[in-house]
Length: 579
Image 1 (cartoon, rainbow, N blue to C red):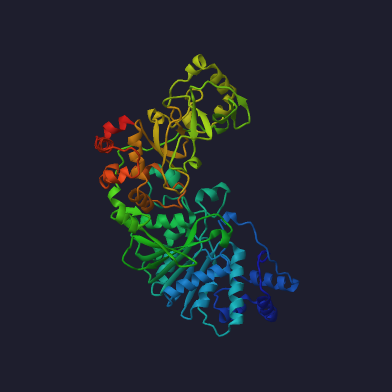
Image 2 (cartoon, rainbow, N blue to C red):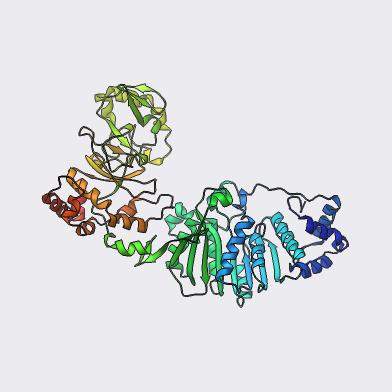
């Protein structure tokens, strides 16, 4: 049935009851409806008009909300749609053509109609037919209450955004001041594919990734980004505005790829919304607004949507993609290549049996089992959540380090450490169930993220999970180094003073400002090895005098300071072999 999942207002229902005789001829109905509300082809067939007549006779207007994950659907509430339209029309109020490529229930279209008397044409495209009808009835309802309001030519089309001919539409409306507005799906192609959704674009490498990237993670693209790129490509030559509610990550990608795409957009704005409040989802999202048909620009100003408070300007600056142009301008002196190699911590993918606590001289694993071990392979372990202090040699967890380098044979454990071997053997099922291919064909009880660097006495560590750019100096416990797990990054030192100087430099205002200027805090893993490898220790060192460091590091002598300076001038190849 066509109308089973549609909300028809009492006003619209009353209108059709009063004009019930017209429904027997859908052409007559269409002409009447066009005059009243501007919608072309309200009914696309006599069957649709006849079925509505039957529903009216049955007094059966059904309101329901179907499962719409297949469409990546997060419907914009009327209040938010109105706020977005108000802000957009405040920036420019002479729009003549409004397009919503995934119009849903039509809230953006209706909000746009309410903002202007200059509109000449409106097009909405929606794949879910009940929403097509709901949009039509909502527009009709508005014009029944506002008989003298301006009536643009309106087309609400039941169609797939991925198949609709937007190039043809762009060509036919090229002389009209244009607003492309909406809220495209907030899902990725792989998410839709996982539930066998039919609402997918044709398979294509639309961002022109290299062969490897196209078949790995970067080939998994966001549907909202895909639709945004279609709109920008088709309508960049129109005088007007693009205004989409999309995920923050999509805006970041659009601005980052603008260097390559060179869309004719300028004066871009990102206005952060509260997605939990507006959509009851935990996704970082925003209104992205940009002007079409301009000299290409490569930056975007970021604001809070509700207060309009300015937050930052991000984008391309000095041929670098940065989160804060202002802070990067001040701190870019330390943007280079780190003389030290930042490493991630130990990886075992077996936390229930490889991580444990010490109680009353015994060890207790994540399964609650109590056991004994020789101390030789037992090391303290820090996780991202432990890296909150300035300096530590304390830990909550311990772990077994079975190898000194990747791929090392582990037979020695059986011969020299019987208690450890007995315990590990008793948990072999857990090791065998590890899914990652990195463990296939490797010795029993293998771990990764291990090497000489793991055993450095002193480490400068940072969390890769959290948003903080604070670094912790990790010191040994009774001369035994403390390990970090694979959510952390670190550099290692043999000498405490060298470690303290490096710690001073990375926590300095200059380096902290630099990191904050290049890190997008709402990214999934905002702190990573690539980011940390950009810290130029030599430039940071040159920016400070001995006296600066002496005030922060106890018992620091000038010879320590100079020794560090000499060390960081060693060639990269030599330096990497030291740590």
